[in-house]
Length: 138
Image (cartoon, rainbow, N blue to C red; front, side):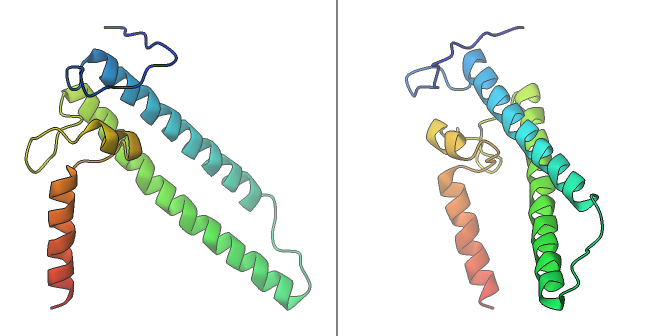
């Protein structure tokens, strides 16, 4: 089913939760985000493969190495985020997107706007973080 979203559309609380328009809105948001991450990764790959380190000065060489290491860490984070985006797109396809994996309750539009890959409601996420803190202190 093809759904066309008006250019100024934003999901609203008074609509049916995860109706076809909202699902398509979030699908497009996730696809744009994924495309941007892949574009940035391509730029990183191009800059990293552009050649070796030619700086003769040890300080300059160390600076370039540090920049590359940071860039690779950033790319690794982006790779993990792309995986989460793909999982969110799968949830859109199977009808579970927007619902908390722990409680089954709606995650909420404001949270999904801010974090479209969210799998837990705010309440469940806070419970998770409290449990992590308790177990980390052991």
